[in-house]
Length: 256
Image 1 (tube, one colour):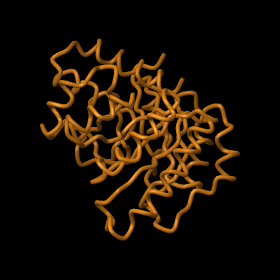
Image 2: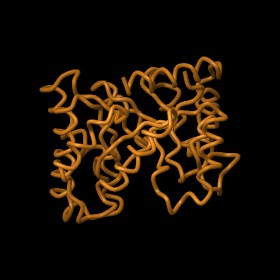
Image 3: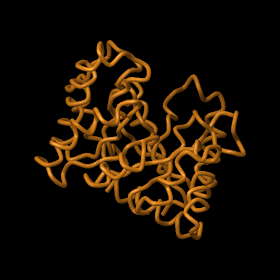
Image 4: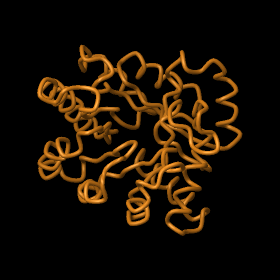
């Protein structure tokens, strides 16, 4: 049983980890588990390789909506990758209109996203959603699919930065949301954290990005997720141990 669970990290970006063995040691020493998330086939394969070699690591495989606008979802390659027993989710997939023009890129992103949604449904896996300036657009796509697919269609909205109303619409579909170290240095999400059902939220780092206080400004890593858990408990006014256990159980429930 892990002590902490970081449900979204990128230990599969080798150019970001010049001291990977030290980072891995801290992960193990703090009894932190993490889901390493792919953004294309190459990084997805690396996530699976890491999961194969380390008990504390699981893999999420998929194609990011905007990291490479020429990237497609090559299903035949992912058909092989998804067979690994430590592949627990599909993504990160979704939509992003912060980095691109919606009028130009909507159809491409929608097609890429739906290909991965259908893939996840075929293999009975949850999806890991990347959403930036695109919550309404994603919900318009997701809500009808949920009505048709039912409980089989599930997932997590990573790095949640939406409103409480948007969060509730995801909860209504049975989707969880997760928070990063950003919550340690802004109060923008306090109300959402405080009012969300505890069993519908999770902790993540998105390492190597957005390190939490007191590590802000440094490269982030999965072992820092404890600061996110601590802050969630503070915002909710709940016992930290209770919150820690709940967030670990939420993650374990998602990965099956």
